[in-house]
Length: 437
Image (cartoon, rainbow, N blue to C red):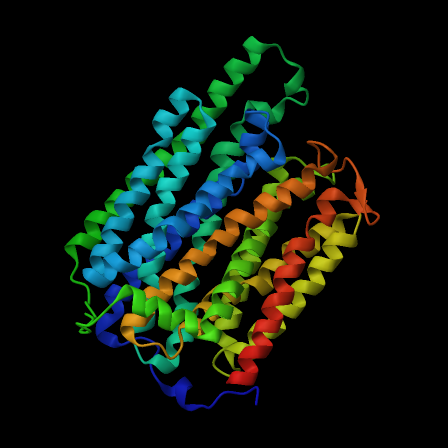
């Protein structure tokens, strides 16, 4: 049956006595949304400022999403040993530290230093995501967990929109290297002056964001938060990992999450290169990303509403199917309709992360959930690896985005074969969930 039982729709999504903690934790979703929204356009910005290839510029996403992979399991162990609140506070400190590191990075003008700042910043995001997602699931009846997590995740696209607004209005519009059509032909002295100025432009939003995060640190440190302490005295990390890895649906869910995050970041990061192939500059391309984020927000609201009546695995399958169809249009279209389709994918991606997350952890006990959550956060490494691979494909014919044709389309178009593969797997994962429900 596609329809759900009506009992869960009668159960409160959030316990009344947990409203304040719920609001504070959901604010964290907006905070890492801002970091994502600011960072996606930086791939193209660094490419122009530092004259990098597409695959070299993709190190921005490698650093950003690689930090999740490196810190997710340590974060889960820390949270298991202490509690959710301490995990949040440590995450906020690391987030702020990584953002503030953009100040010395701009002084040195070293690309690796900026990447290191992003890497440390996402240590903090790994703590926040490893903490916040299962924390939200614990704040109410398990039968409403998927709806509750989708509701909290609505704040994430709000953060994306704020982050993109910052990137467009305070970074992209002020980059001199993007205004000069023949930046590569300038003499060394002129390039150095422009590069120094542009790196300072990139620096400021991150430093300010770091200071804002410290304010959240102070607020949350002063508020009493529910503990949900784990009473399992016989906990063993090795045994827990063994149990999790023995569960087929958990393994398939982690892989689905890796494919999803990879697809999401590719569709958002390379919207700038896809626009470039249509003769559209970065500032204008950011407007298309705005529409993508708005559709993502609307899709999440609509998806959360549909979860009252339809099973999560059914909706996941339907949304993956439509995502795949739109990506096929993106690949084979040589006009703006392909760009519109790429923007439209965001509506159908909206449901995927929280739904895959909740379904993968479904049925696990409290102790296994904390460690299991870290595996799903580690899966965010898909956002590091797959955009890097897409950058390599785009570079097949040279540093441009339309140097050669593959299967009759420009290399930038063809590179979206990777999101198509991702959505195909997610569709199959949804079918497997349906069979096992």
